[in-house]
Image 1 (cartoon, rainbow, N blue to C red):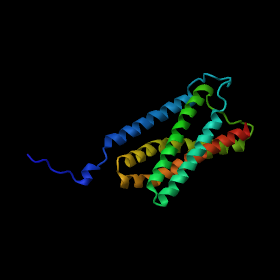
Image 2 (spheres, one colour):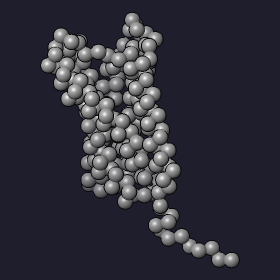
Image 3 (cartoon, rainbow, N blue to C red):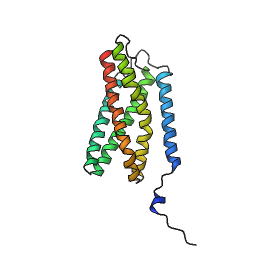
Image 4 (tube, rainbow, N blue to C red):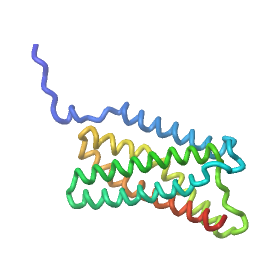
Length: 187
């Protein structure tokens, strides 16, 4: 019996269950972070341990931003291997950020913006923080799907989604640094 050859379209067809799994894991991670930030009682409410974590978070976001911009420059100039290395570096910085962020919120809880500066607080909460949170919830599955397409050789699909993933990821990284900066200035 002869086995029919698969066409290149069949070989590279994206399994929807993988995409659904990535979206499901991302939704579970977002739900966990929501619980951690808004429902969990901090274990170090007196804030006596690891007080450097918010600054570390901002630094990791800044390093991610730099790696993203370097990766963009490399792909723009056709340097695929350098692009891949820069994007993996950005992914590592984002992963380290997430670990540090979870640790910080588990220990210290959510940082509250002071009510003594109502205009700055409005800008912080509604113009900066809310879009940052919503964008990060959308960015996580997009980043994972973009990496999945790249790592499995689905480069046309990678390119299509990366056009949207890159600016969203960049926005989340940059706005994360600004969130830290505003909290540091107004505390």
